[in-house]
Length: 87
Image (cartoon, rainbow, N blue to C red; front, side, top):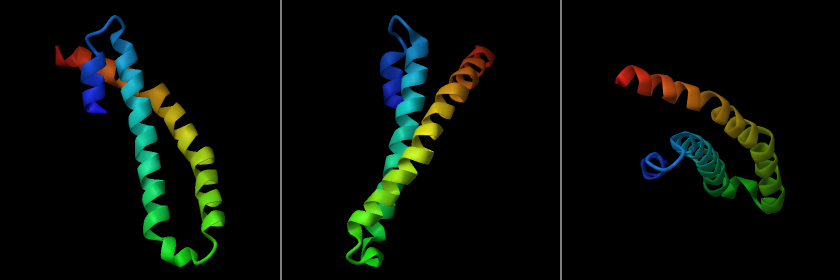
C-alpha cells in the first residue's frame, strides 16, 4: 500500500492517495489474516469447511468492513498532520 500511496500522491488529488492506501491496506490485511486462519486451521475444520468459510466471511463482514471504514475516518487526518509537521 505504500507504493500505491506513492503512485497516486502526485496526482490531481493527493488526499485520494491517502484514502486509497488506508482503505486498501486495511482491507488487504483483514483478508490475509482471515484467509490465513482459514488455510492454516483447515485440518481442524474436518468436513465442515463450508461452515467454517461462512463463519470467517461473517467475521469479515462484521469486523473487516467496519475496520476499513474506521481507517478511512482516522488515517487521513493523521497522515495530513504528520506531513505538515515533517515540513
